[in-house]
Amino acid sequence: MHTTILGIESSCDDTSAAVIENGVLLSNRIANQQVHAEYGGVVPELASRAHQQNIVPVVQAALIEAGKSIHDLDAVAFTRGPGLMGALLVGTSFAKGLALSLDIPLVGVNHLHAHILSLFLARKGDAGRFPDFPFLCLLVSGGHTQLVVMKNHLEMEIIGQTIDDAAGEAFDKCAKVMGLPYPGGPMVDKLAAEGNPSAYTFSKASMKGLDFSFSGLKTSFLYFLRDQTRTDPDFVKNNLSDLCASVQSAIIGSLTQKLVRAANETGIREIAIAGGVSANSGLKAAVRKLGVSNGWKVYIPELQYATDNAAMIAITGYFKYLTGDFSSQHITPVARYDHL
Ligand code: KG4
Ligand code: ZN
Image (cartoon, rainbow, N blue to C red; front, side, top):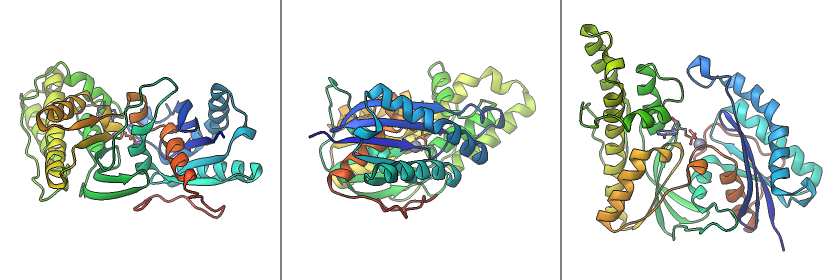
């Protein structure tokens, strides 16, 4: 028997649709929104409008690439939250309408849960190397930074999280101060490859336990640049690679310090990273290196599944579908989402 799930993602500024059959990914289409570039960040109202324009063509393209029609679908999974309310409403309304018209189940998905389950994505013919349970995941995105123990596909426990900015936010805010375009994370990553990570040190908050804090680093970085540019107006331009490498190294240092501590405290040796910042080459290298020295098995999502995409929504929808965890037609999106 075939189980075919359509996944829809619209929580921020990417409209995406994907089709999964029996846990195997058949298609994953993403329409990025360019309208935000000139504003230096995502403008919620523009995001909602762009989702409305993109959603039908993106779903159609995902179905065509998968070689499926809407009548082959067994369920529609969608991002319920967290995210921008207006953006979530577009995906939620579309998913509800489609599921209702086809008389098939609707499956609401937590975007953060989906980032973690992106580790289980595989296309036909892929080797498919997946973590064993329980595994420890460092979830690092634009809005969230958490240490999560996954007990099975559908049960998770958050054992640490940021008390202020997320790691992606720290990348983006520091990039903005250097005059780099939004989102700055990927650009910092690229420039850091040419720079010296020990060129500058910035003060970091040392948090107790397994929690993180990034707002102190951002402030320290801002003040450092302000002081330097007073005497040398071209300081940022002339030292861009070293600044990127140093700030990236500081963020990675905070993340990996807590990851090691969490692995030691839980005794878990199956270690994963997920979310947009797991695309960072410095973080990937650092976690792989730690894996070797600590005897961990390390799992990192492919680049295309690290940042926002509907494939991760579809795979999460698939696991929820298998246990009959469906949503009612009365379901509403949620901007904040603290459970599964
Ligand atoms: O998971 P994601 O696509 O969206 C959210 O759910 O937030 O994460 C987006 C975040 C942004 O802050 C972006 O700058 C960051 O991930 N990011 C990166 C890289 N690629 C994306 N940060 C550092 N290095 C990268 N290569
Ligand atoms: Zn995300």
